[in-house]
Image (cartoon, rainbow, N blue to C red; front, side, top):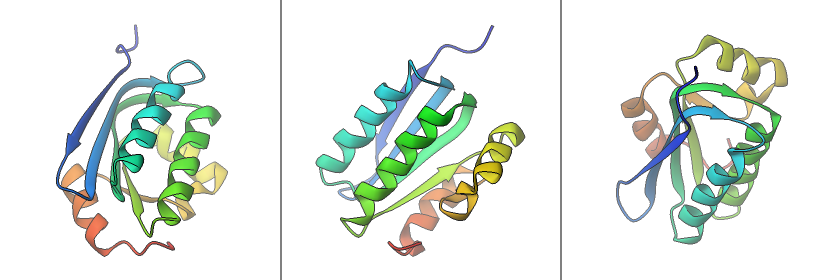
Length: 122
């Protein structure tokens, strides 16, 4: 049985924020992720890490949520970095070409560091 879906948040400072996802992001759970990201952006967070280390699956709905967050952040000169260690999820990003749009790293510390160097138009 897949792990139960859960979201956790970590506000690092006034601009940087981490949203970690456990379980599957699909048609049913993606709206919750979208709301967390929207809330963070509306609260003034412009540099966001989405940690997918404990994510077991994501579908096109989840990809749409991530793309939407990047678009909102870019209008605020912000950045989004994804943490991923799952080869199947990596393949999803590669097949869709989204690995060219997102900065994807293998661990949270590297993602947080990338927020400080990631240009808004990447």
